[in-house]
Length: 487
Ligand SMILES: Cc1cc2nc3c(=O)[nH]c(=O)nc-3n(C[C@H](O)[C@H](O)[C@H](O)COP(=O)(O)OP(=O)(O)OC[C@H]3O[C@@H](n4cnc5c(N)ncnc54)[C@H](O)[C@@H]3O)c2cc1C
Image (cartoon, rainbow, N blue to C red; front, top):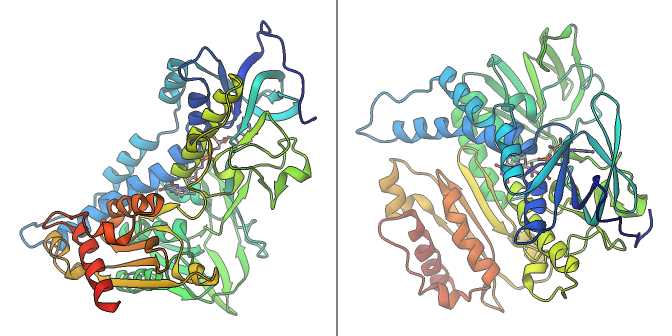
């Protein structure tokens, strides 16, 4: 593979302007944005289902499972509402409606916007060239006139604990697609995937034990956020074990029952030298980039993730791009789609030999402006950097926190609303570097903070952004008042 290869002929039927390998949401968006408003052509190469992990095994099924849990919880905290309860069978049916393993509608969408779909596993076999291996073992060579975009995502990591892999643990795929609720589950991990799964499994009746290697849940957030989640998990009866060392796993019998479902005897885990026996183990211990068989040179990778510049271009290759989880910038669907929009604009501009002038061609948000929501109980919504990170960088930091339960809008939303919000402020520049909200339904609060962080709105101006009464958004007013008192 050379850095500036020749461009294939226009009339070759195996040639498109843009080839995207991997049809998750970032791949779909990259193809769409690279051709829209032009006569350029694009093809997506997909080895499983167009729509990717997010649509069938991650974001969508997990949120479909969590929403009924949130609604029942909210209803039970409201005098005047009676009899709210989960209907597990209906819950699973609705999850299947949203995340059924059929990509016909996604393929139809792709075709409707002029994107072709080729089924199979793609790898780079030359400059602007992808070889696709089909499920039957056949091979087909595709060529791109302008660009190849890699969007092959990640898979679940399995820590190298003796016996763990052999015990056929559940990955995030299995736990989002469960059909029967195990009576007891151990979850290995304490991040977003682990915390979200703990909530729906517990609500569906499972005994849940979380084995967390470190000393916090959601450790990438402000410590008080994970602290509030841990408090609530204790109330819910989720057994969270911090500093847990899992040294061995064993399962006497394990068998496939078809469609990827595994059935077996109980699983024995050795945790801190003691035995824990559960029906299933869920591993939620990070992600591994799907870059190994893509035909990339070693110097294009960093810890397996594909290195890109802020035009989402692999440095040194004017035709090769990587978006989504694969570049490791932010393992989130909305960030992958954002990168894809930029990548598509860059491809379009380069195809027309236009200069890459303007922010629409630059990945700016991945630099300290990433929003994320953990939809656990309570929800944790954050954007930007934490106070610890800001201090680590030598920034003069001011922090302010406020009890969300004391905001009228929150108190009206439900009895006993528990939550907290905090801002990280660059005291010198008077701008927001980060914000965190913890509480029921706080997911919708974070976008206002994202606008303030990205726009670098001075806090003195935020004073004039008046939240409506009685909304939970009045937290902004309370935070600014609290800051005024402190300063
Ligand atoms: C349980 C769970 C819940 C999550 N919830 C959220 C959430 O609520 N919000 C959020 O923003 N993010 C969430 N995420 C993260 C989100 O799923 C990922 O960030 C997102 O799926 C990344 O998209 P992607 O296209 O980069 O990768 P993927 O979605 O993994 O898609 C990659 C695609 O490439 C295909 N592929 C791989 N290799 C090849 C190849 N060689 N040839 C052809 N095709 C190939 C795969 O089959 C797949 O379809 C969650 C993740 C998990 C595990």
